[in-house]
Length: 266
Image (cartoon, rainbow, N blue to C red; front, side, top):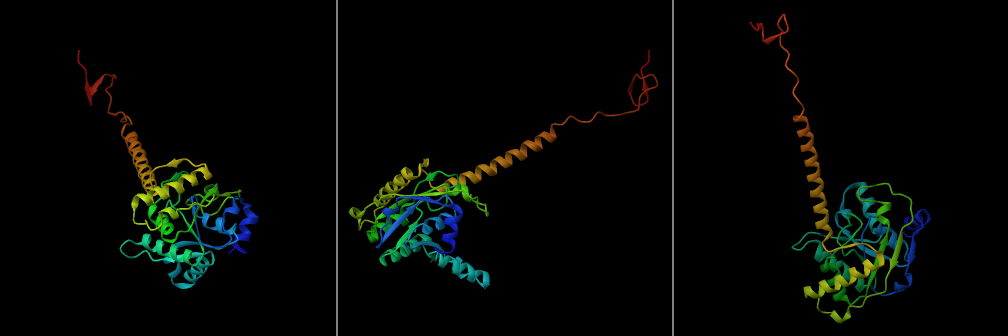
């Protein structure tokens, strides 16, 4: 991936990077990044010498046919790890297990604490379960990372990217070993995640919104639906307010008819 896709990305987009010295040359580390675009998972690994492993839904690796095999090969090639989302707690537990396995092998584990792409370019509240549990279970340092302008290259729903120069800012590693063994304490998980999100906010310069991005997406979708319904209602009301066409009836011979065929008398 680094020599094929990575080389093409570097040549076409010329991404800039600050803080590469904060990525350890070896040993485990968690790369916690904001998430602006689908392309984040390609730009970040392409600019690092080491392999970065992200998680992806297992369906990408099990689809049938030639297309399915090509898709699976592609995701394996770019360092994605299949996660089975079935079970009592679904993807959450699977992501934690996957992250721990990567770090126990001494690798770099990439995670987006927001849980999904930002719907509007702002930074949203981090979900504490995955990041906090993996960090406290392994003792691996957490490195905050800010992706810059990738949402302008490939906004949600756009297939063809724009050619422009994105950036990556890599912060100093955060040590949470003081909390190790406390991964079941939800207050510790919340505190750890908020500290990481604060560092990402400083690196990215994004406006911070203290709700989950999934909630924001739902609210945006509901607002768009309500706006469409209101516009439709206004259009229908405008049609109903049109003045009726004047009635046309037979006129009297002297033009003073007050009814069909009727003439006023003296």
